[in-house]
Every structure is written in C-alpha cells, then in structure tokens.
Length: 274
Image (cartoon, rainbow, N blue to C red; front, top):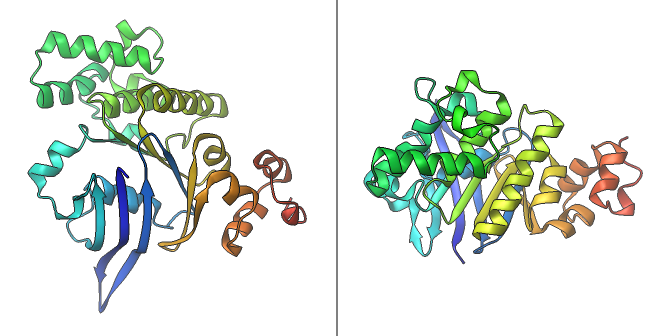
C-alpha cells in the first residue's frame, strides 16, 4: 500500500476549546489506484488533502499517521517535506487563479520545480515545460508558454496547474476540486486528461469533489465524509449504487433524477428528491 492514512485527526485552537475539522479518519490508496473523496463543503475533504502533502497551517494540531511507503508525513520537517512535494506527491489546487503566481509565465512556473529539484538548465527545463503543456492539451503551446495567468482562460490555467503537478513525475496526484467554476465541456476535458495520465503514467490519484458524477466516472474507490468524519468507504460502484450509510443515501437522493440514473442508483432511492 503506497499511502495509508490511519486514525487521522486535525484540530485548530479556538477560545476555550478546539475545532476538530477531521476526526479519526483512516483510508488507504494503492499504487495505480484512484480514490474519490466526496462530501459537502466543510466536511474536511481539503484539510485531509493538505495534511497529506504537509501544507496544514502551523496552528493545526494533528494526531494519527499519514504513511507514504511506510514513512509518516506528519513527522517530517520542512526540508524533508519540500523534497517530497512535487517529487513524490503532486497537487492540483482548487482555484488555479490564486494557486498560480501572477508575476510568472506559465512556462516559468512549470520549469521552476524542474530546475530546483533536478538541477537542469533553463533551456532543458523550458523544453520539458513545453512538452508538459502539450501533454495537458494547451492549444498553441509554443505561444502560451510565455503567457501570464491573467492572459489565459480558466481551463487553460487549470491545465497549467496539472502540468506543474506532473513536472517531477510524482507517484501520487491529489486533485482538489479540479473542475470547480469550469463549464461542462471544459470539465470533461480536464477529467479526460486526468484519466489519461493515471492510465498512462501509473499514477495513484486522490480526487476530491462534491460532484458525485465526477467521482463516479473517475475513481475506483470512494470515501464519503461529513463533519470531518469518514461516513462510508468502499468500491465506487458499490458506494454509489448501494450506499450503506444514511448520509450517503441522502446525498444521492438530493441529486436530480437524471443524474441519479447516470450513477446507476439503487432502486430504493428512486423516490428521493427530483
């Protein structure tokens, strides 16, 4: 098992108490496997992903373990975490406009990690950045490599974010709501790219979303979260077609009927919300 999260809890101090945002969550991700994490806003999905890549705020209090090939990420210092990020774990952030540096071109941002971690020269790193832009289907990549984020569309910025996450050929890719605020056509293109990369490169994938349709089409297994807790976990087809937990059933029942039909819903849910 490449990644094992065991009894993870995350809390933040507040006046007279503490706010627990993740509580006693355990889940595993195998090599080449895709895990979907789904739940409402505030369910703890993104905090779980930030803990996995060592980007929690300093005020966070954690317990449990996040084991990458048996080594606990929560016990690593900043120097070790910096060598881990990008090289072993890549991250696609939810909002590329804020995740990207507005003062650097797309090519510079992709090449930066390549130069820092591999010690390659500018020309070689730029050539690799151009190859990655082609891989994530950026149109006219030879021109777009010198574009700044504000000169690109939302879908193009998200593609640049994917290229940055892939630049060092990580073993695990975390995609936190990668299709948020994109139109339906662009959403499909982004998901197609992720599917292709997982298949071609043998990546493990953690895909975080509130969209059950996205989870259904792109993941092998699904973890359902609510108020920081793991409510249900198992093969995606089983979780979405035959949910065991009342909360999961309510999530599915809240979808429009045509969307539920696309998930292959349990007939017992047929009387839910339209």
